[in-house]
Each structure stands twice: as C-alpha cells, then as structure tokens.
Image (cartoon, rainbow, N blue to C red; front, side, top):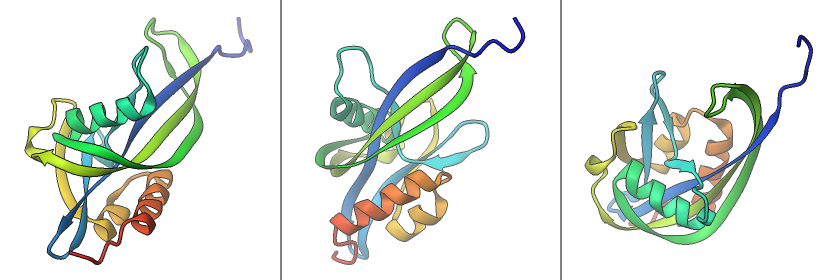
Length: 152
C-alpha cells in the first residue's frame, strides 16, 4: 500500500584496518570492490553465532588474503540505507559496522577472494586518500594514532 513504511532490518558487519611494518613506515591493506570499484576496508556480514572480532579476522582473510591478530577495537559505524533483503523485499537496513585494528601475521594480498577486484598494501596516507567513505577514513586516522606510522 502506498505510503506504508518499509520494514526495518538490523544488519551487523565487521572488519578493519590491517597494518604491517615496512621500511618506509606502516602499511595497511585495502580492497577494491563492486561495480563502482570503490576502495574500502575489508569487512563483511557477521554470521549467526559469530562475534564481530571473529568476523573481522575471517573477512580480512577472505577479502585481503591475509591472516591477522586483533590489536584493538576502533569505531562502530552506524547508518541507515534502503535495499533489498534476501527475499528481494525493499527494506530499511539499520547497519552497524564494528571496526578493529588488526596486526598482520602472514599471507599475501594476492590471495583475496572473488568478491574483491584487487587488494593491496598502501601507506596510511595513501589509504586515507583512497578510501571511498569518510567513516572509514576516520577509522584509518584512529588506527594511525594507535600505530606509530613513521617507524619502519
């Protein structure tokens, strides 16, 4: 019926800023996804029975191809958007994205999954400039404050 409010669906994702030490300072892993080729942090939906920190580790492994350890929690981003649910019904999503600072352990960004066009290591400064969303740029600045980005 016209004018009826859309149903609200709560959606929770997790991911974060993966960093490693390099000769020129800290580098972070970012991924390029979707038809618009947006650069963003590796992240994804929290599966049933999974905790956000577990999801962050899984998504970093899947999307950026690397194993990491949780170093610290960062921000929880909250926003609303309209889209289709699994049954192709129009709904309003109330989204929560738990972001973490993650320390690189092993792996290669070339080993990302099919959902990702490209994953790469870049400087914190480049990542901050390349990321498509201000909320993720803010998380990158938060991460940089926790990691001495100038030390090799």
